[in-house]
Image (cartoon, rainbow, N blue to C red; front, side, top):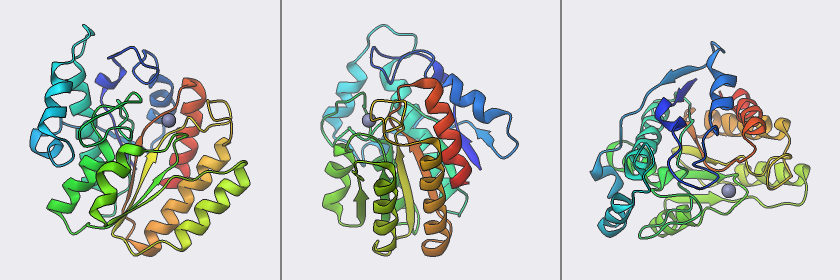
Length: 257
Ligand SMILES: [Zn+2]
């Protein structure tokens, strides 16, 4: 399976927990020596692809933002969106991909953003697919701890997108809910994940074990193979216990690949 990644994602780009130094190194180390994973570098998303999901005003706002870090926010956010697009382009031909990218995107709406997000990677990549391929309808499983209000803001008015933000009090009911919703999902061309790991047992949400992430990955794979010709990709969102996040990402990928 392709892992879409660039070493520029290691560079600290803001003062949020998502932009902190050292966040992606453990996950990179956990995946890089496994021959199952092929690392591929993305290009920054072309402006036109970002404009499908965001207002010109919002894009200009991000461009203006410069906190004096080694990499400009606009540049790293464009590279994350480019990583999402590369995942989508792999997935449309039935090749699964995981985007080990940052900044995350699911709290970025059409004309605003918060929650450590700037550009909406899921929306940009899905709208790219809508306009350039036969993949028009998508099921979005957002298993981050937080509801992806940006995904909803941009995609829900467009009708072709079904979004699930599972909520449950324990792991078994969480997994049961995901299973049931996948079984009853509308027809779609692709399944994607807003893959946040802050719902992990050792992270902010304190709910899901590494095995639960494996099972979520495996359910998505099974769904993709049965319902949409294997088309699937997942993009990293939250996750703040960096070492445990690496274990959970690896487990998810083992089920998903
Ligand atoms: Zn989150």
